[in-house]
Length: 231
Image 1 (cartoon, rainbow, N blue to C red):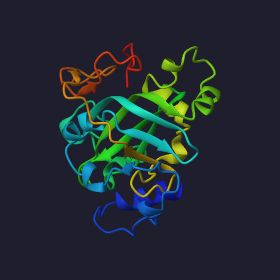
Image 2: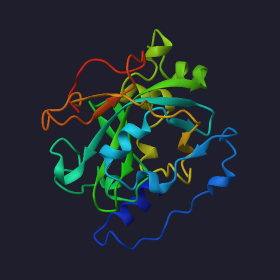
Image 3: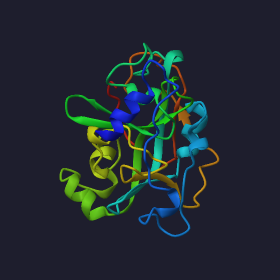
């Protein structure tokens, strides 16, 4: 909740002046594997349609050892995107999206699932990238315990709600810093480059801006989600 309160202060009326979060220096991330690097703040400080395809093959890493490679993403662009939660401005629910880039925006949907997003752009823009599906890499036993209904490992994180459940992401983590790791979670680069030719197409499960080609995924990847539902 401290992370969320800090984000609410950042995204308040002033949007410009706020006491910064106290975060752990990136160099002291003892749960980061050797040769991996945390994505810097500047990576996120761009339009989400630029960030999204470059997030493919990056790794979402938890301090408890769980890690999954991002294989599917969607961009949501605030006031220019009728499908975005932030389209009509800031609310208590979406305040994190209007804060500093490089934070985790977590929202509740369908009355049962959490969706995980990386905040992008500049403070006040309300833009981000939905982490839609991932390939489990580390901590699979913990993911299986978190997702007991998954019959196959390919089903552990093959959708936004599944991804959040497998990685143990809930609303309590809304506002967590993906750069400073104050919430025990980061997005990291393990040296695997984004695909040169990702599949590009319309987003899944939305009722507005359905023609925007703002969904990207790794071609023919078995962990990509399936089945449209409303966001």
